[in-house]
Image 1 (tube, rainbow, N blue to C red):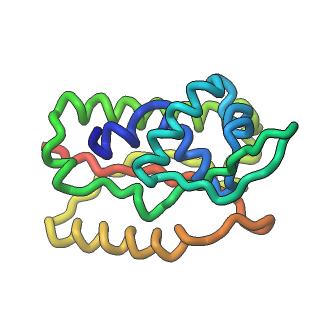
Image 2 (cartoon, rainbow, N blue to C red):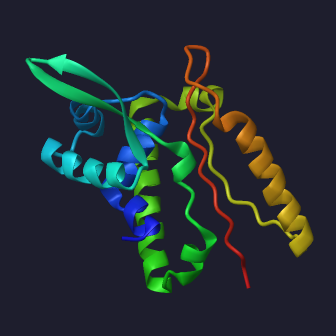
Length: 175
């Protein structure tokens, strides 16, 4: 299975996204946090992520005489190689984007159902679409700048002073 198919699967994407929030979790904790995925299904998908080294066991704990593993995501393994992106069919890209969009919609829906509108600005909730008119060189400079800014903050650990915010972005060239 290629990396795109592995990571852009609806359940595995949700597992990775939940683990990216910064706290290592057990399967039972993942099942509770995700709500609608049975533990047996989570074990099956976690096994695939472990085999491909996108997730690792960072600790174990005894619960009712059974040893539970605690999982964390390996951020450095998540980037999909450009060669794989280029070799993926248009139909598969549409499927992967649909999974991405559905996951994002689910995160936004949960936030909106739990948060009154008066808190959106304070918490940084926003969405927008902005056309940018750029030469190829200007576009590459923008991408490098965004990547540089993201690298500075991507490694921050979760602390009580830091609010976790999901940043989702994409560029869609227009003809």
